[in-house]
Length: 251
Image 1 (spheres, helix red, strand yellow):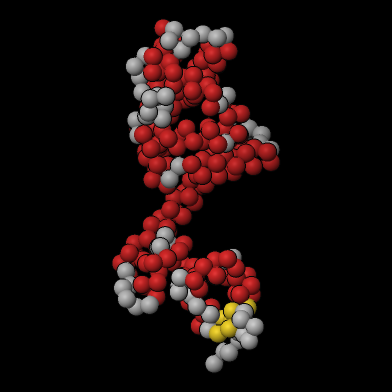
Image 2: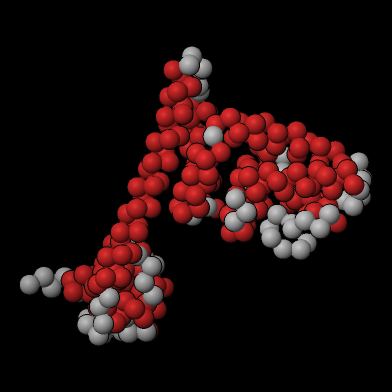
């Protein structure tokens, strides 16, 4: 039998958790060390190592610490829930890989059309993919992809071409000091709302994700010209026109 003992720091490094986490697991009774040294230091054996590996795996699947304790101590092991969560995680991974494939197919198509691409183009595509996936759930991305298929390539291209012109017009109105209640500004805000709904389908959670993207990602703001101040200005114009603001709430 393996009688190797690990210090708390050694076990933490081996599994990839923090020492503070192990202390917390000990305090709540989820993972108590096999023994303590004469000086009171925690010492973990191979059984503790195996239990910690199981705890970490269940945590990655979204289980609470209470649920993990019940599962590992044999009080109630929700095997169906474990399988369902694992399946969900695998599907999310597959969706992620499919989206990456779509991105690279787009790059390959551009190369096939004779377009020259640099390393910056490649890195930009990867960075944009990571940025999008920080703010949209796999389910939202699937819905957006399906909506895009329904709209069709021509409609999507028309909307993409209209956005820069609309953003520029709203920016000029704001920088020129025009009142958001100005009828012309309200007309711009209504069109803004229509384009947002064309993208989100009116889903408030997707709209919130879009707002978070522009609030939290400098790269997105730089590429689009949309910043929180501009979104606030549009929100005021929408309120004046009696149109819901982009985040679904009154500003």
